[in-house]
Amino acid sequence: MKQGILLLNFGGPWTLADVKPFLYRLFANPRVLVGIPAPLRQLLAFMIAQIKGPSSIKSYRSIGGGSPQLKWTVIQAEGLRQLLPRNGVHVEFGMRSSEPSIEKALEQMKFWGADQLVLMPLFPQFSTTTTGTCLDVVEEGLNKLEWHPQLKTVAHWPDHPEYISLLRSSVDEAISLAESEANGSTAPIHIVFSAHSLPMKIVERGDPYADDVARTVRAVTRGLTAPWSLAFQSRNGKLPWLKPYLDDELKRLGQSGIETVVVVPISFVSDHIETLFELDQLYAEVARKHGVKHYYRARCFNDNPQFPRVLQSILTEAQA
Image (cartoon, rainbow, N blue to C red; front, top):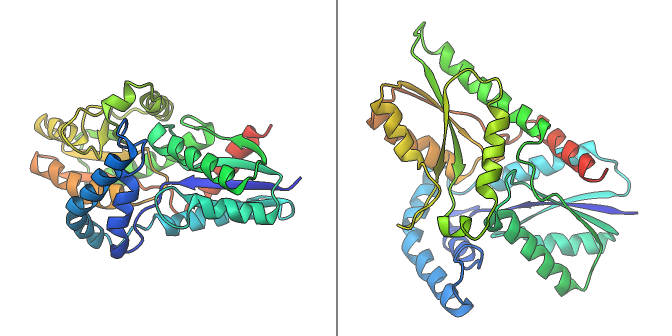
C-alpha cells in the first residue's frame, strides 16, 4: 500500500503583494464569517481586505516583508520525510489560504498513486476555523478529483506527550533566559500561555477549541513551579471573543507589580505574523507601558529537529 501523508496548515502572505489576496481568502471562508450567505460574505471579505490591507502590509513589512510560515513548514515537512520509510510513503503539505494549496497537494498525491491518505493538521488544538476548514477543503478537493483513497485523520493532539515535552522545553528555555538575565533578582517570573482567540459565537456553536487549549495548558503546567495564567490574542472587531484578552492580562500583571513576564504561544508550531509582530512588538509594548520591565517570548518550533519527531510519534499512534 502506498501511503500519502498530508500536512495541513493555514498559510499566509509570502510577499507584500500577497497580503490583500490572503485577507480575502481568509474572510471569504464560511467557517470565519459564520452564517453569512456566499455572495454577501464574498463582498464583505473584499471590503475587509481593502480596509485592513494597508495596516496589514505595514505589519508584514515590519517582520521582513511576508510570513515565514512557508519556510518553516517546508523544513518541518522535510524533517518528517527523513524519519519515514523512503519506499511507499510520500509527504506533502498544503495551505488553506495561500499557495501551495491543499488542492495542489491532493493532485500530487493522486498522481503519485497513494492508496491511503493520512491528514495531519499542524494545529495542536482543533477548531472549526483551522483544522475544520482545512478538512472541508480536502473533502471538496477529493470530490473534484473524483479520488477516494482510504482516509485517516489526526483531528487534534493538544496533550500528546511528545508535543507537551517539546513545548515544555521551550517554556523552560525561556524561563532560564529570564533568570540568567535577572542579575540575582528574586522578583517572581510570571508565565502567560497565549492562545489565538476565537469569537464566542463560534464557541457557543460547539467548537471544541477552548477545551483543547485547556488540555494543553493542564499538561504543560504539570510540575511547573512558576506562577502562570492563560490569555487569548489576535481578536478582531467588537464582538466578544474568548477571554481574558492578552493585552488585559499583561496590563493586570504590570499593574500588580510583576516585572518579568514570559509569554508562551501555544496555538502555533511556527513563527508568523501573530508571534513576530503581535507578540514580539504589539503586546511587548503593552506590557512595558504598564510596568513589565522584562518581557520574553518562548520560541516556536520552527526548524527544531525534535518537532518532526513529534509528528512522527503522533502519526505512528494514529495508525496503530
